Length: 424
Image 1: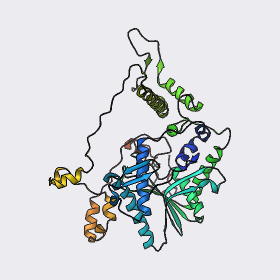
Image 2: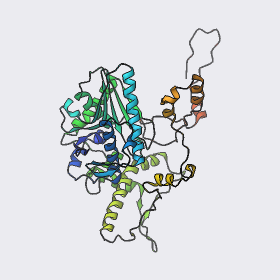
Image 3: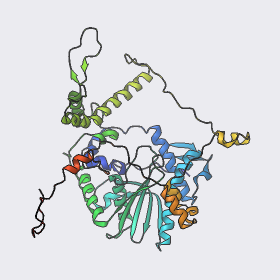
């Protein structure tokens, strides 16, 4: 099966979050050519192709295609075991969801790699994209997106809202029906991440996104540089004026120029981060981080391109990164034929708690056994990190004692007093 070249609209699903942050990016990006796809993007495309191939063939085990050659718009590729295992995570989830809906008496329809036009519902041109999987039943719809990368993605992104708007419009979903958006990302977790939207909640999200898309059509659409610039063709030195202004300001804030001293090659003085650094200064540096890193990454990419073409970049030369050793294709079969003991080259690995609990084997155990297994499951706290205010999913109390001390205490009152306690 050969998949057609995908349609890339200016207001495509993958651009939705960036457009909400910077409506002017649509006009800016249109002035510049798209960056060529990275090897990681191409690899992700191949995994999507395998998933599509399995679903259209009703083949619920991707390892069936191990060693097969498939074709998509990025070229031919051979299905390897690791890719098949990742795709199986998606296949298991989709199969389980359809079975659960059927058991509840729902007549569910499966739609694979379907292009949906979100703009058709709001009279906004070139706003839509291809949804990997859509499940549609009488009282709801679920949009499922498969991600092959290693950076965690939430199910609440505006990219998913775009797909859901288009899917609801195309399949004439009633206003009162619920909407579910799901991300499946095997390199991050074996468990899918889903967001259930009640009708009013989804409608609010839709209006916010539609407003940003409509603003992007205006000649004076506002621009704002930030971390969302990462994939914008205009966010490069010498292109977007807002990006250049923010990058220049960030560099000026972080690095203070001083006259070069005799015998030194560094004319720049980097401010020291110490106990004397104010919280406001730290916040300013954190705000500048994505802009500065983007600028430096662009400089490195351009320097590498020139060096590979034979140009001399003073002080730098080409080298190869250290690569990790890996097994040759077919090594597993060869080792098996050699009758090498399996424990020499494999290791025991627990399945995820969700995989165990959802399995038919677990459901066949006694209630006592199930309880004992569930008692072995723990959910550790995630590592503490900094995120912009208003985006926290799991707020952290930094000083329990000071937080407790800050709770207002009631004024002491006579025991017989009928007056209610007042709080300071």
